[in-house]
Image 1 (tube, rainbow, N blue to C red):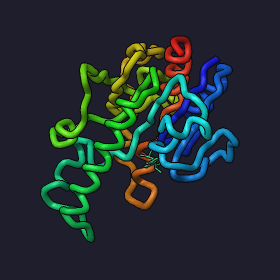
Image 2: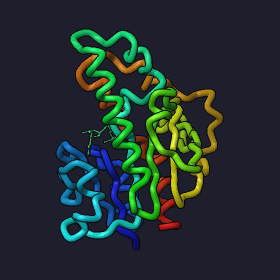
Image 3: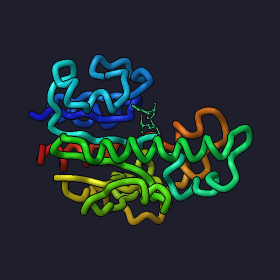
Image 4: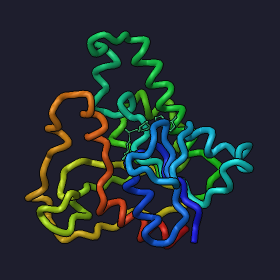
Length: 216
Ligand SMILES: C[S@@+](CC[C@H](N)C(=O)[O-])C[C@H]1O[C@@H](n2cnc3c(N)ncnc32)[C@H](O)[C@@H]1O
């Protein structure tokens, strides 16, 4: 079984899906794990994937970065690069764009042989800053992995994956999207809005563990 690192995840959703299939899966985030797992590293992902830290963190067979800090990379937020949100400056916006793009680039181009980085559709300023090599993204919807109308995956949220050494995810659900909810778009304003909008979907996590775990 493989050693798998799930980056930028504090919910444990993807980590636990891989663990359920017998992999040695760890999550890593700047924040503590919400489930109190002892398979969670609180550190900068860049430290955890740095080969110089292999004696501390060991060798990874696969890296999956689940929704890195993407607010400044995704198309839906491109307007903030022209007019910043209240109490923020344009300098903040462009600095955060540089940081977000550098993090994405470092993960995609890490030395780990199998890599998947998830992100919504990106704007051109983000794309210009990332070295994708020959990696083309593929896009899926959570409802592609929903077992039933009332399952948590029966949602609309276009989700992109940039992968190295891993195949496109195949849908595992039977629904056609007509009953899919749009809770992500309509999440109520508040401090937890960004976290709620970026929470990962369990059916999609299971599909990743089954389909990518088989490769790892
Ligand atoms: C948009 S949220 C993704 C949440 C994730 N989908 C989940 O279910 O837990 C981005 C996460 O990246 C973490 N993060 C930001 N920069 C990081 C870094 N340099 N290293 C590790 N985690 C980081 C944040 O703390 C946050 O939890």
